[in-house]
Structures are given as C-alpha cells and as structure tokens.
Image 1 (cartoon, one colour):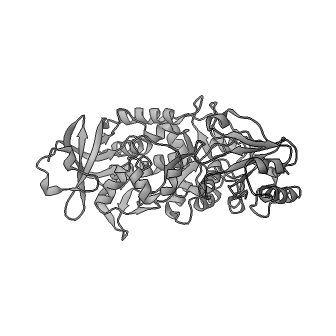
Image 2 (cartoon, one colour):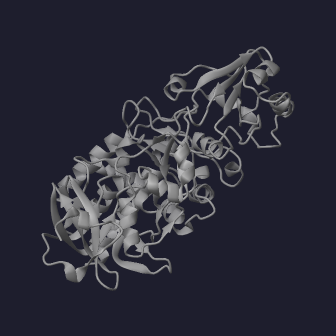
Image 3 (cartoon, rainbow, N blue to C red):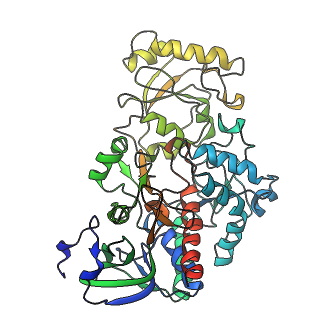
Length: 494
C-alpha cells in the first residue's frame, strides 16, 4: 500500500492493514491556517506531542489571504471598543450572532464565543498580535491604514438592530495596508514553532486510518513525495479549509456559488471534509457560502438603491456588503444595478478594482430606464416609490435606516453595472463537518467519532449562513474553536 493512487480521502485505511507506523505522535493536525495553528499550539502547550501537516510549502492557507479581522466584543467591550465609548454587552453580541448565523445556528457555540470573546482578545495579544487603539466610523471593507475597530457586519441594519444593540466588533490587526491576515498568521506560526510542533510541509493527507468501530488512529500522508503512515495516539484534527476550489463538490452541494467568478482559498478542495465523511462524519449547511461585491466605500453609495433585472429592489442597502451580494446572486438572471444620483455617487478606486462601471446615465430616470432596456415604467416606478417614502424618512418595503435614506432626485442619474457574470464577486464555502464546540466530529445520529476532530472551514462553525455573515467571524471561529480542540487534545485526553 505505497501507491498514492490506492488511497482516497473518501475511503479510510483499515487499521489492521497498516504494517508499520512511519511517524508516531499524540496529535496530528491537518492544515496550517489559523485553525490548524491554534489547535497545534494549544495541544502542544498542554503537553501533547504534535505533528502538523500542510499540503503547501508554507503556512497560511485562506487565513493569510484574509483582511485579518477578528470579530470580538461582549463582556462590556474590548479595550478598543471601550476607548471609543462602546460598552458591548455579552447578551447583545450573543443575540446578534445568533441571528446572523441563521436558522441552523449552533446556540452553544455562539454562547461560548460571546462569553469568551474578551478572553480571546487578550489571548491573541499575548501571542504578540498587536491592535491599535483606533476606530474607523466610515463604512469600509477593511482599513488600508493600520487602524483597528470597524463595523464589519449588519449590526446597525434591519432586522439585527431591532434585536441587539449595535456595536462595531471587527478588530483588524495593526498592519499597514490591506491583508492583515498574513501578519496574523506570521505571529501564530512563530508561536507554533516555539512550542516545538513538528511541522511538515508538502504533506498531503491521503486517507484516515480507522478500526472497525470507526475510531481514528492516524492517517496516511504523502510527504515530499513519499507515502508515510502517521499514528496519532490522541486524535487527528482536520483543519484543511472548505471546498470552494472543488467544482464537483460545489455542483453537488452549493451550485449557487458557481455564479461567482472569484473563489477565495488556496487548497480548499474539500479533502478535509471528505476525510471526515469517510468515517461517518456528518456534514451540515453545505449549501451555504459567503459572497460579496465590495461596492462601498464611500459611505454615500449606501444611499443608493440596488435593483435586479426587473428593475425591482431586493434588499435594505444599509446592511453589510456581503448580505447585499448574497441576495444579489439569488436574483434571477445576472443583471444587477446600483442606482445613484448626482448627490450620492462618488468614484472610488474600489469600484475599478471590482469592475463596477457606470452602465447608463441620464438627466431623468426615464432615460436611464431606456438605456438599460427595461420595460417602460418598471425602473421609474421603483425609484418613485422609494423617493416618496425616503422623503418621509421611512422605507416600508425594506426597512432601510433613516440615516441612509435620501430621495434620488438630483441629476445626473446613473445605473452602476454590478452584473454577476462580469464584476468581482468573491466567494467561499461555509458548510462542513458537524462538530461539538471542542472539535469532536459527530455522525448523523449525533454520536462522537472517536479520535476525530475538526475546526476552521472544514467544520461548520459560527459563520454558517451567507445572508448573515460578518467579516471577522471566520478568523474568530478558526482561532477560538481551534484553541478549544487543541486544549481538549492536549489536556483532558492524557
């Protein structure tokens, strides 16, 4: 059994077929992103011997491609929140996250995260991740400066603001320019090495090794081209990302995401999820994914309105940019327009980067309607209804907040082309293995599969509902629940 083609993530190797172990360890972690790093780190600090396998030639995964935001608050607020007058209660954070994680929310995970978020902030700073005491009130995707606190979700928008007091919870690490995720991973990777973790790069996990009771005893990996059988006495932690790079899995589970042209990931081929499924691991929310088109800043753009190919509104535009895009890709057809007037439109370098261009312009909305080939009266009536109520400070159809309501009455008028098949719609998956908060993988009956754990996007964690996603919940979920899995393996299983 030394031919790589004889192994599959979908089929475990029977324990009694393993003639010898080439590597022996206590804990094997698959994937060196944020979840893998924190799992390995806490397990090693708990006294376990840890081997970390990474298929690429360096660490980071999708975590290193992120903006570095981590969603944190509660317990009265982090030091950054409190410095700017935000006394963020645990209950408000819990209620918001419970709503934003959708109809299949895991209340236990949400509760744990909300109650321990402040402790997690301090844990991150103890590792050496720096946060500047600064706040950006303006709507932004992520700072291009080294500033920290941002609004990274739909906290101020309907329906969330009606159930939970809003507070900004996006904490971006101190890093000049976009892409602070690389900085976060560099810090965590240094701590992993210092903890004595045995890191193996160019190491692909090919199959789990399990006995007839489905208990996981280790895995088979190809390391630098050689097949190696690795024994993990306490357990295997799958932190190998999602499946956005696997078109076959997307066709099967989340075909809507195929509409988006720009997947976010590195080796997110679903292999970690398939490994878990091979021994009976249950998957949940596999149809869900994050989608966005970064259409602001500037914040004035939020005062415009989105319409679909029928000229109809479909969302309150003051919510998080990802929520808007999630609703956009659910519309029939590819045509999506953002309507602005002379008072609200402003050019931005972001728009050029995401291929948003003016598709039509005119001195009246009738002219714009004709230019984008909509039936007479469709767009005009949509704008007229919106303007009539916006002048009264209300939005009875979609509940857009009064602060963002402005009648679109000042020419010139423009329709910005936000076509799904043309613009830069990014996406990644949110479904994965069903786990306990401490990482144990469950089967279809809710029973634990002995020796198998998962965290990050291989598991279905906090972020599991595209329409409610908030920036920072992925990295927050990966680092926090990765820690819990590592602690479980490092301490309580001795």
